[in-house]
Image 1 (cartoon, rainbow, N blue to C red):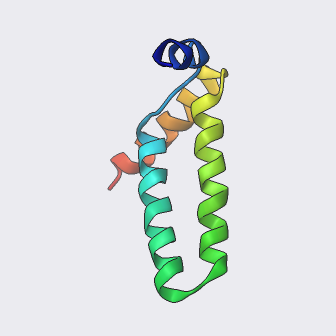
Image 2 (cartoon, rainbow, N blue to C red):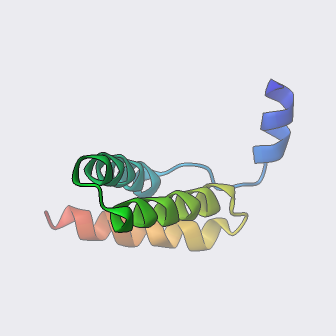
Length: 78
C-alpha cells in the first residue's frame, strides 16, 4: 500500500503552507456549520476540501508554487 501511494504521488505537488492554512479554515467552517446549523458554511468547507485535494494532486508544480508564494507574501504582511 505504501508503494502504491508513493507511486501515485510521484510528480504531484503535495501539501504546502496554503493547503495547511486551508485545512484549518475547513475545520473551523465545519465546526461552525455544526454549531450554527448553517448549510452554507458546510458547502463552503466542502468546496475548499475539493480545492485542497486538487492542489495536492496537481502536476502543475509551478502554478501551485506561485499560489503558495503569493499566499506567503500576503501572510508575511501580518
